[in-house]
Image 1 (spheres, one colour):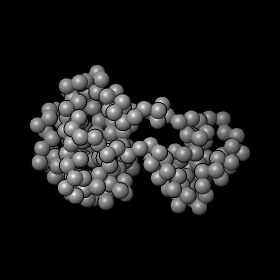
Image 2: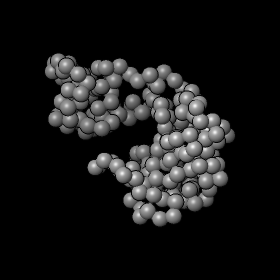
Image 3: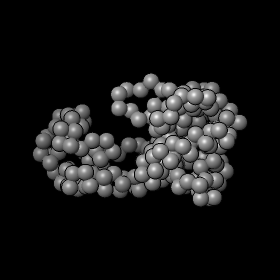
Length: 197
């Protein structure tokens, strides 16, 4: 993989989510934990429902749920381990992921965009300082899809994605080889970046 990517750490993400919870509700994680424990919910689903009913949704739920029910296994792995795991059974696609990472690293170096890379177990996200704008996912043994938070009309390489109501990632670009990570993809990604900055 070219260079060492500027991956956003899980601790940074967790701190962001804690701040989000405080800004949205006026209460910190400790306060919400005490309230949730007082509810004596029978399951994670019940707790999530209770949180939504009390105005806590999305990423703001994570620090509460993780404290109550345990942190995900991928918190224990570093970014390289997570990326290796995503492509372990599809090594021919790993150069595509590496090329997307190299592209975003080049933006950081030349000042084009302040993109961070956030690894999950089955995909990685590209984020602006504000929010996620792209999700890079190996969807089969022969393709990687980049799902985009972008409202542009479907044209050329940009396809419409059938999603559940409210899902903002309604466009995608399919990549089948390293050559697909080209100037036209960069242009699409930069439009998504700008739309979410």
